Image (cartoon, rainbow, N blue to C red):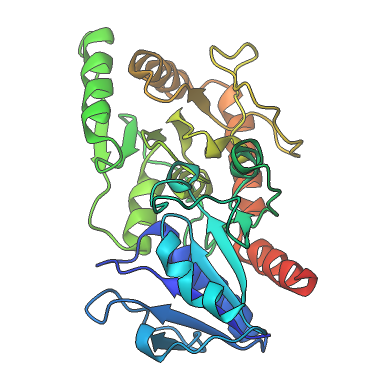
Length: 328
């Protein structure tokens, strides 16, 4: 069985595209015939890694009934070559919010011979409840050689890292509420934008807190990367974040309605309902107070964050990918 993975036409490597690339490389390096299929010649191309899966152009794609054709959610029309060829077609749902976003008129998931992969347990539940189909979970991985904690965090003011591109208006609103609530107490704000993975990790290692403002999310990587770099994450879950997010509060102000899977780590952050800027600002203030007071509860939460990041390592991803492909 050859595996062909659709590479969407994007101008730069987003998190979702990076996961597709990791998936292809894992299979290729394990000796399985695997190809990335690029739709747009002018778009982003993976380059610079040794033993990477080969990339072929869309017009050169020749699928057969013995092949597997994997397409990320939100690109339903890209399933066509596999459907026409009678290939095994998989939709890899990395963000539940896009599952129905590009469905052509008169077409639904009931009528398509397509199976699903889910990037997290909450996404698998979303797929089951909305399409009545089961979806094996294939989680992403983060590079722990890049996203690791420093020997010690900087002394002095608390540093708060955040990503302005993730719901920028809400991030600004949280900052404004925080500034007004604390009466001018000072933190250093560290925006993360326009950096490669090593640059992101450097900022996170200098931060004490990571403010998560992203939603919707399938299995958000930035909070995981922040945990790996020794930050305490605070903020939104994106729904998909409940795959690994657990509250460090004994009585959380917000809990999800979906049952959460059992995990071996304890509370690893302060989590709020998506869009609840007041709770996010209040939680951020509480987190800052914990650092200023050197509260002992931080040690447990930060240790839980390390355990969480370890569970999402590239090696764990590799083992999961190979086990899943053995079962297909």
